[in-house]
Amino acid sequence: MKKLFLLIINIIIFTTTHLWSQKIQTDTLKVYGNCEMCKARIERAAFVKGVISAKWSSKTKLLIIQYKPNKVSRETIEQSILDVGHDLEDKKAEDKVYEKLHLCCRYREEKE
Image (tube, rainbow, N blue to C red; front, side, top):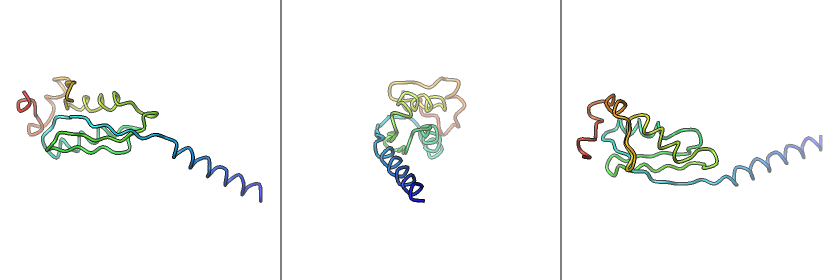
């Protein structure tokens, strides 16, 4: 019984230490969009495995992401956003994907 108790304590200590040792990175991305539908789509696309939070503002066009760089890269998150039709400050989504966005979500006319 004592050995089982010590084993459980060691597992808890190891797990807690491991979780605390994982770094969390925060980045801000400029992501183009217009409305609440865009907000939901952008945040859902950004929330890939390894992302802890993703919050986008339609006013500032800024997406603040918190993620574990040992689980996911910024490039993977960016690509996921591009794949749903939203441009980044320095990368453009494919036209065929952009054209599938709802009319109120189309932002390129405003941007260009």
